[in-house]
Length: 329
Image (tube, rainbow, N blue to C red; front, side, top):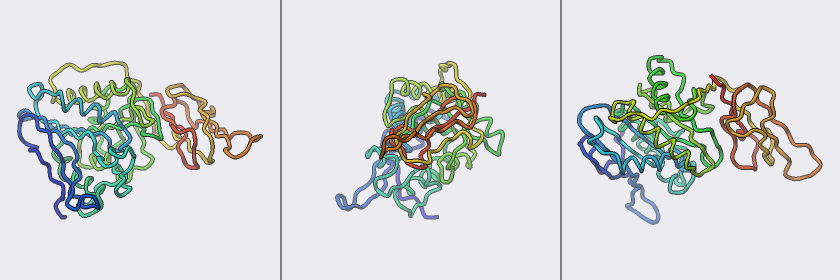
């Protein structure tokens, strides 16, 4: 395997606070010998676990960048034992363009793993994390929200894993994050995901969905800030007392939790996020765009639970995810 073209401009193995970049050479029309400069911070103090914290895996999700910028600015190395590697904008080209995917190559970073050192820009970023950063980590947190097209109740998530000891460790870290909801999450498209790549390396991994609509709320940022702090305490890195509030446990065991549109049209939500639903309840209507006098198509829940996620834009297309039902545990 070829070496990664990405270099880190700061030491990863020295105590103290270091702010710099992951530098990826990128020759283009406006900069023949240019580079993509992905901000990174490393805060370390002595021997101990390593946590790798990332935001903006999708570039239109902002809770991670705000919470991790805050952490990089204020985390005192004297308060920790071990190391914290912070990358607020994982998919930096997408983040700068306010897009889910990279404006350079169209790549979805969260479907590009394990990546390639000789691939496109997105694949090179994935390869560097997969081979250089993840192997150094004991705990990995990747902060997501719904971006411009989805909205969620704020939850932290873990996955069903073959290794039950590893799964239990991930669940414990998810619960320690202490989002308002804690979800055992079924991914509908897990091929090439960062989550899977990290879990395959045996790491303790937690993901989140903390809101959506391509924007922030004071609540979603507060959940992210508290969760990051609690995560580091749980990892044995940050010496402090966690802030613990009620968290509602949810499960997504199968595809019946998802409702997909089979029509183009205007979306009318019938149930708001967090509200209870029962199998057969109408959760959304899709009205035609091109005529009057036609009844909307009604979409119903396929299981009992709460509405945990929904499509955010009001205009929907065939195949869009209209709703996600989380089953109360």
